Length: 334
Image 1 (cartoon, rainbow, N blue to C red):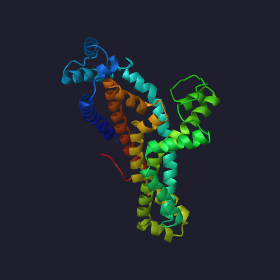
Image 2: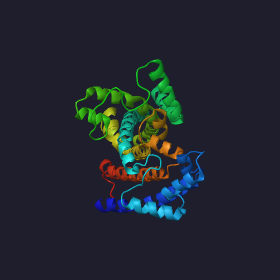
Image 3: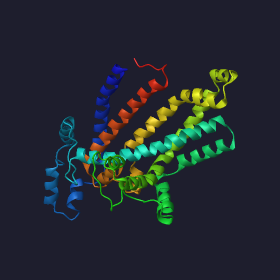
Image 4: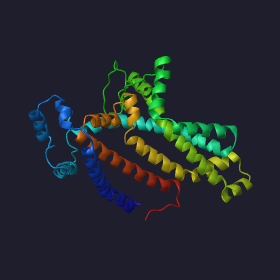
């Protein structure tokens, strides 16, 4: 296992190098000039040329990439053209917000998706089965931005139950320790901030969890049905075990491998920037940050975010592979 982890970590090098080359090339092929964006459309040619020279935009693209790569190897993702702040710092400041949103969303998706899939498989072709799978199909087909707007209108505007934007109420201030609002509010004993943070999390988490929840439910059902047809399940039933024992003790664990795969992939995707959800709900996370960076042609910010996304996705996949071993002892990595 140790050598497998080391090998996977070493594979990060060519993956991240390839991602960096691809992202650097594509962002420079995109229409628009960041120098004009910063200076304004009515700026003089001298001002625009001065900005290009300041940020190295007048150099050949290969030279720009080499300069940027040397900075990355030193742990520096560069400085934002728009804010002149360190991209590393800006990502670090926003990552806790994205991580909390992703964790909350995956909590909803895993709990509801797995329960719906298990019930659907154990009661195949029943009303519950058709209802859950119909809702799962609806969830997979639902555009996230539309669902987010509908949730805002129903629960925020009409019913006024939940806030529709932001991370916490502007009237509340509390000491930040880790950057995770829920954790920090508990550590400082500020329960008003905890409740406010929790209420702000609910709507974007539900919107973000819809597609993973539906996918997990469908995969859990398919995997459970395959396991329930196996010979060892018939043997357990022949021994006189109750149906509940057969399903929850023997079938569920054997059906979890494909489910864990889907959970890992979805968690990696959500952690890599819930762009639409963060934009709709004005959530101060990495997804919203990269949207603003793309609009402003902020090359260092976009490149740094893409590289960070690739790193997180590979790490989540590695953790998923390690979890396999603990779910199924038959799996061994050489």
